[in-house]
Image 1 (cartoon, rainbow, N blue to C red):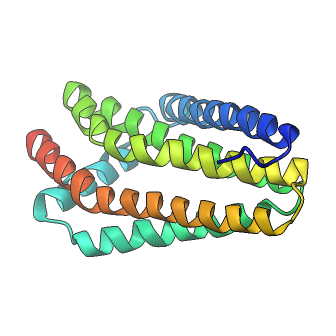
Image 2 (cartoon, helix red, strand yellow):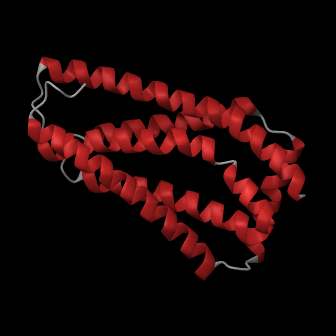
Length: 196
C-alpha cells in the first residue's frame, strides 16, 4: 500500500506504528495504576460499576451502542485527518491514543478491583473490542503522524491513496461499532449476570 511513497515516509510510518502501540499500552498501565493509587476502595466507583452491570442485565439498546461507537469513531477519524496536516497534530494523536489506553486500563482495573475473579471475566469481555480498536487506532494514528511529520507530497497518487485509506479505516471502525453493539454487549450481559 505504501510502496509509491518516499522511503522516509514508509520508515516514519513504521516507527509511529510501534510508538502508537507503546503510547496505548503506557496509557493502559497509567489508567490501572491511577485506579489503584487514587480510587482504590472508592464507593463512587463501586456504585458506578454496579449501575453498569445492572444496565447490562436489564438489556441494552444495541442500536444506540452501535450509533454511539460509530459517532465516536467518526470524530476520531476527523481529528486524526486534521492532525495529519499540521506537525503539532502528532501530539494530539498521541494524547488521544494515551487517553484511550488510560480509559481501558482504568475500567479493566476497576472491574478486577471490585469484583475480584469475576471482574477478570468482565474485563475479558472488552477483549474483542480491543482486538479491533487498538490496531485500527495505531494504524490511523501512525499514518497521519507520518504525514504530519514527513510532509508527504500532496500529489494525485497521494490523494487517491489517502481516500482509499480513509474508506478502509472507516470500514474497520464500522466493524468495531458492530462488534461493540453485538459481541461486547452480549459478553457483558453474560458476565454481569454472574457478578450480580
